[in-house]
Amino acid sequence: MESPSSLPYRTLAGAGALLGWLALALQLGLSIQLTVASGQGAWTGVWLYLGYFTIWTNVLAALTLGAAAGLPGGAFGRLLRRADVHSAVAMSIVIVCAIYNLLLRQLWQPHGWQIVADRILHDVMPPLFLLHWWLAVPKAALHWRRVLVWQAYPAAYFAVAMLRGAFDGWYPYPFLDVGTLGYLRVLLDACAVLLVFVAVALLLVALGRWQVRRCERLPQY
Image 1 (cartoon, one colour):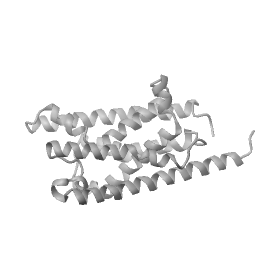
Image 2 (tube, one colour):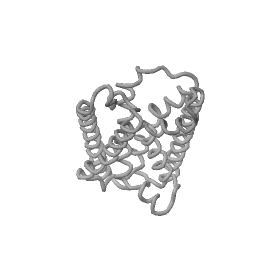
Image 3 (cartoon, helix red, strand yellow):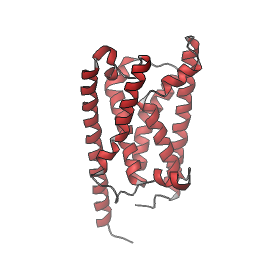
Image 4 (tube, helix red, strand yellow):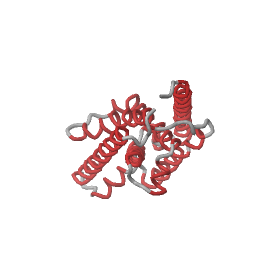
């Protein structure tokens, strides 16, 4: 494997980060436009925008890819360049793609620029991030025990979504809608989704360790 700091990998990471930020900015503008048009105001658009797991995960993906490309620097950049951070983000963005395409896509029909934002955030960024993870992230430091640590992010998102919903009655996804399903059903749904997170994380660690063993067996020139 080439060095993760080589020009082709940094170019891939930089292009992915730029694409991610552009799609996030576009989605924010569309969210504000929608709530302003409905008379709810711009801040409502921002509030709703920040309620989605897709948004936060794509922010993390864009930050992580940017760090791989060289920005930001310093301690924060070094943290983002760690293999376990990359892998945790990879886990989450795989779930973004899978849940959206399996459970949510059929629930609405985007139009115009919304199609562009929708496709990039759900269909383009996940495979692009995984490609960078596979090609450029050294994985010798990946360990099975990190899988449980990675679940802190989706667990924290779930807790915040429940608090937000209790405050204003709005839930970002149908399977989190306490008003319709009740807390018990939502908690069971959340546990099922968390098991999927764990399964994806275990698969990524297994693939990473296999890649390390394969590279070690290759002749060195």
